Image (cartoon, rainbow over all chains, first blue to last red; front, side):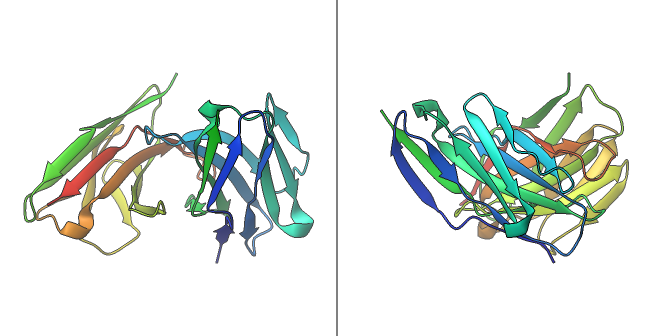
Length: 114
Length: 113
């Protein structure tokens, strides 16, 4: 069975602060894929990143960075110098094995105050 | 580039009425298609997925059904809506590689009264 845990439910920061969103996953498969999605108030899920289990290299994209650590089964997401437009619900998700079923965490509501 | 459309954007329906939500994808062929529901409390639940025309897999027994009459069209239906069917319905597409990224549509917000 596969599971994604996002223990933080709501985070509030002031603009320009750095913020890290935690994600812990569980799977028995050696091949799996991890994702982060952003859901702004409009509701659409916006794809942010996909990583496979064989690539532990951290990734940076502008103000976003991701830290993948297999030793702790974590795939954390950091926003540097947060902005009001970053306010959204962020979901971590997992596809495990050969199936195409995304397992989502419950999401983290991030509020960035001006 | 690929685009995914959903309509209607919002819908208010009485209990017992029928439902039809439509999802279409442009710019790709033979996509995998998915229906998710997001109830209050944010959890996303996979309802149906399809790997081809007429091929539907149901994940959760429920009051809903899905059909795929054309390669890039996915329809979610119900004959009689229940109050518990209220929620935010999201359609997604992915390539035929089952572990590829899923891209989501804008969603339909359904309220059953």
